[in-house]
Each structure stands twice: as C-alpha cells, then as structure tokens.
Length: 359
Image 1 (cartoon, rainbow, N blue to C red):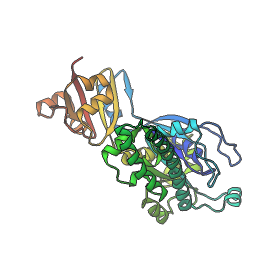
Image 2 (image 1 turned 90 degrees about the vertical axis):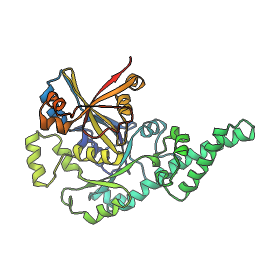
Image 3 (image 1 turned 90 degrees about the horizontal axis):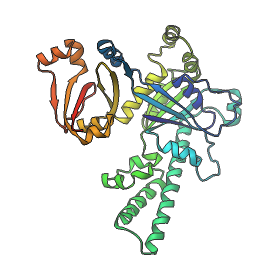
Image 4 (image 1 turned 45 degrees about the vertical axis):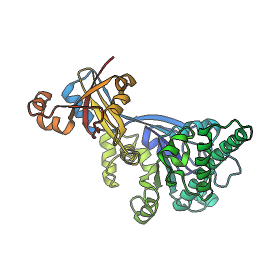
C-alpha cells in the first residue's frame, strides 16, 4: 500500500511523515524545499500477526506494510502547468491513496506570511490544483487523439477513449473530481493507464497543534462531508515517535490519544481503500497479505504469486477467530471448521489460506 502525502507549503507534511515513520527529517519553518520526496516503509500493526507468530513459531514473520511518500509542498496560485515535477508525478501516480495534509496550527511567521490557518480553504485549494493537473493531462491526450483522427489513423478504442476523456474534461472544468463522475467500468478500464489523481481515494490529515487537538469537532465534521478525516497533533506526535513505547504510551494517555499516528492512519487507509487482511501460516513463515474487500480466493492467490492464481485448484481455509477459539488446526478439522473453497470464494478479513495449485 502506497500513500502520498500532499499539501500546501508549510502545512506540516514532513512533520506528519516523521510521526508516521519515525524518521528525523528537518521540519522547521525555515527549512528549504528539497528536490525529491521523502519515502519510508512502515509495518502495519496487527496483533493477529503477533498471536499467529506465537502459535506457529515461524522462521520469519512478515507484516503488511505502508509506503509513505512525502511530496514537496506547492504554493497556491503558483504560475506553472503542473503542481508536481515529472519525476514526482510519476511517483504520486503510483500512490494507492492520497493524504491531504491541512495546516491547523498557529505560527507567528507563517501566520504573517500566509495568514491564519484555514483548513477548509486549503482543502479546496488542493482539490482545485489536483483537478487542474488532471485536466491538463486529459486535454493533452485529447489533442493527440484528435491529431490521429485528422490523419485517419484513429482506432475504435481511441474513439471510445475520446468520448470518456471529453466527459472527464467537462467534469473537471466544473471542478468535479473524476471519482465523482460516475464513470462506467468500461470507461474506467479505458482510462486506467492515466492514473488520474482525482480518481484516487483521498483522505484528509488535519495537522493541529497540541493545544487545539481534539477540540475541532465541527471542523472535522465539515471536512468529513467530502473526505474521511483523521486529526493528528503533528509536532507532538512526531516527538512521540522517538520515545520508547512505555514512555510514549504515558504521554498519549495524557493527550487522550488512543493509538499511534501510524496505527490511526493505517486503519483509515484500509477503510478508505476497502482493504482487508488474510494470512498464510506455517513453520517457515507467518505473513499478512492485503487485498480488497470482495476479492476472491484466486485474487488472494495472485497476491501471493501469479503462478498460484494461474494454477489455482482449491484454497484450504479457516478463520483466525476460530483458530484462536479452538486452539489448533487439528481441533478445527475435528469440528468441521477447516474448509476447501473454490476460485469464486469471497475472502473474508482474518481468513487463513493455503493455496493448492498446479505448478
């Protein structure tokens, strides 16, 4: 899972990145812009993996992971064609979801230059910039298609692509995100290669200061009308990420923070993306795998390895909950809770699978 953190300059994206990943990237208000994004991979905390590791005592344990990408902040109203450089755009296109970081903290210098924090205004500014980026991309492709049509070199698929792109451009010109245009599956398939930014799942990260954290219910409710929102006390939680677990837990309790920044963002990301987790277990390895809710046993096999999906025969399946309750695989078999499922079986969160396949 890849999450791209984007936002306006000095919104505290790198502070959030540090809080999520335990990194130590410079974050002061005078820090100069860097040419490339910060990137780090963190494990998704899952107590079920820990419990399965205790039971199977494997040689290796592998958690699901999140790759966080902290992109350079952009200035609103900046006179340029793209909000991302070519190299940044290639990376942000590969993100599974975007996290819009909104400044909700006071800072004498920033307030003097940029005005007081206004998260709702900044959200609209960022969305407009994303829409503009997609519009430029769509219009550029339309120009190329028209060039082929004039030369008599257009294909039927190109004609269908043009109709879909025209619909997209009409929506984007009204500041409507592609995800809200109700495109058909056929249209989405035609446009999959573009990886438009406003087609991606989006969540908001409200970056509040320590004094106002958890006191922004109305603001969060307003932001939630458009995007799922999580609030962080960014600077405070960045400092927490450098502490030992026991010490961090004590400070979190004082602030009424129920889980770490990483864990809260992970939970929100899974919800926004519609992801679930299944497991593979054994003496060699216990591993958590991420797929989308509604995926089949063949999809799960493909997440492990494409060969397993191609040669799929059956999936041996039982649930984590039943395993913990009964205590052993033998007990599951004795009670008829160990199943063989076909390729159309819809995998459930917490399923433990072993794929039978033809090599």
